[in-house]
Length: 326
Image (cartoon, rainbow, N blue to C red; front, side):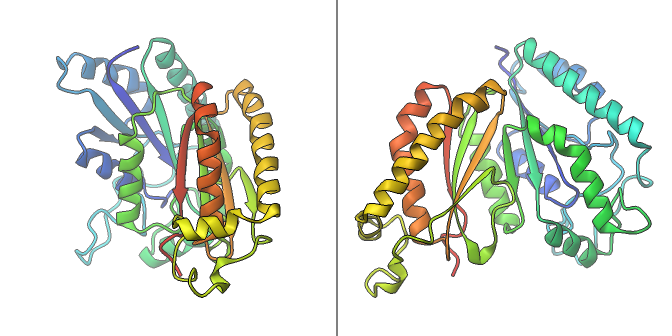
């Protein structure tokens, strides 16, 4: 295994790739924005020749292989300046055939680098269509793949063409509900967890239906059928990570049965996903507000499954999306 760590950042236009790479730069990554994928092997080779001065790098990869538009309307790189970032290119890329070639080259190059022992990780950012459309509207920018000025059509095309890259990702992050500080924290947390490249990641994510279903979820579990601590006065203002709330939620027979069934489902699915070389699995557990029942269930599942999945070489991550809301 090579000593240099490489994180490739990809994702939808406006999802926060610029913020992501700046977050990595702040914790010591050598960062390059929109490096053509064909130059990636040479770039890594040169970094290896730095005599150990460059041990971790992050690269933003654009589906079109060119730096033709700015990223993340919601979180502009010059926030607070009163001016919108200026485009660096001259408009949309070429046709579908060029994009197919880019995706084909991307897969081939990433696979070649992994075979050579480089720990390549792909971090994919996305967001919901309404949020992305609002970001583009607020900044009065055109989506790079917009057809006839339609942002919605541009997003549809981009999702379709990026699906192959998303499927290769080690981590998928939905930035719909994140501000610049939350996204930066999430990116840095991922980078500092030290997960070996190629290791499958299972993310247990709690959320509140009041704030929408997580876009990145592969499986969604609804636990609103469980008795709600919100209606118990002494528990109402506490969160699901508090012992009293956990004891309340876990005491019910339906809670115990649900946990047993979901454990069996995960145990059944993991080897099948591994066989398909799936690199990330996000299991979202939702209650009404995301502050009580879903947090308890996610924490309990993590406690039950951690040793088992670790033995399988699977990295387990726990996230509570809406714990501070409401």
